[in-house]
Length: 231
Length: 218
Image (cartoon, rainbow over the protein chains, first blue to last red):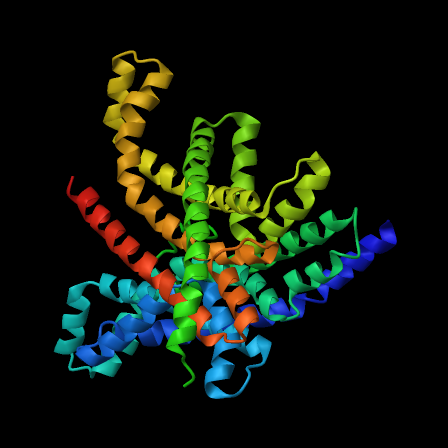
């Protein structure tokens, strides 16, 4: 019993690197895409706005698993080369959650008081300076709590990569299942606890960022009630 | 590009059959989530000592861990433990229902907190029994307000149904996979599966947005 339990735990742990890689890669891509698409949603150009709106609606309107299957199984037929599973996985995680993040960024920028835009114009700041020095630092504080939720969603979605054979925790666990009869409770127990721990790490990291961002603006850190999950 | 309209046309009947299963699971799981979520919210609100904390912990745990693992755990662990076998379909309804109940609980909580305290005081002044306060005063005001938020969760639930192919539910995506395995053509069925999702979820989100506007006005 105990040897098979330790075997189960080490096998599931062997998927931890892939899970963390996928989550971190997905988060990095999400941040980039959210900012790009979120700011593009507010662009004065109709074309830019249209393209980013199309991106957001397509990725929010379809299922993440369908997107994964499409990118992994259909794209190779269309373009003639196969993506490495981990790369395809990070791409889908980033593209999907980036579409949700774009709305978060847009909402946060819109929530910055109008007078801040006007003040920046009155000070003769260029549009880029205005965004980088005045608007984004304030919007950033607003973005962090919903982004925390989004990153937890992303972490949970990494389990879907088991469908395209990324050797992450869910996949390592499923490979064990046929071998162990009575002890499969340990497989899922270990997995769930590990996901919970990573989720706690993400949340505490984001809380630290929230405090730092609020301090930078000279605000007292507000009581954040962001919990995990939610779309 | 390698697109055959004929292959696309031929895959439609099976995909629609799968879509029906996806929609059935979405509706049944939503019903479970709405009912169970309300129970969770009420238990937390009433603050029954141990039960209330247990529900809070359960909600945090379910929300922070992947749905796919929960589906596997229910599918492979519940039958040996209880001697009660569940079909993939029922497992999907239960897993999605419980997972989204934890989201719905938060939605109800916000709705209940938004009921003005004067309503509580008036109910107390009228000496209404506790059950009447909930059923006749608080919930009739709280629930309509949260309908759009619940609707949004039903839409995201709809988009999570395909992960049930991990336990063999014959949803849209699994049917697309089936078509792909039979005809060796993957482009059409998978693309159409995506299009079907858009065709359902875009009108649904427009409907929810309309409900939101109506709720904001009333």
